[in-house]
Length: 126
Image (cartoon, rainbow, N blue to C red):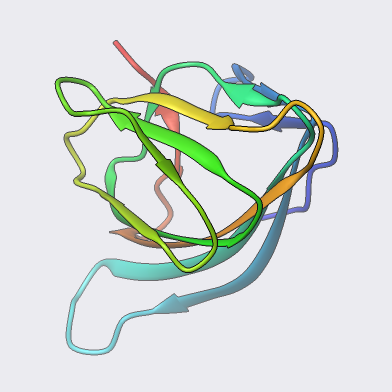
């Protein structure tokens, strides 16, 4: 996994987001859970940056480090979250809204995925 500045690309070359920086922090096989791995990364959203609808195919845990983000899964309530607040997505959720709530300040989140080993962390929503 490589850090991507200004764009996040999905498997197959699909653009996920512009003006976003992803920094991988850890990728580890999970002991006692065959075929699963944990991935930890940070995502920094530039002012006003957002992502198109996508899925993670993972149990996804989000913790807001800085700024404010707007998150929503399909069929769920749109939520604006600030530092210290959390968000969860199941492997079947469609992440319909993922954006920086501010047009003047950046935002940063910590993301922890539990996913199938070697599978992409994000895929386009169908």
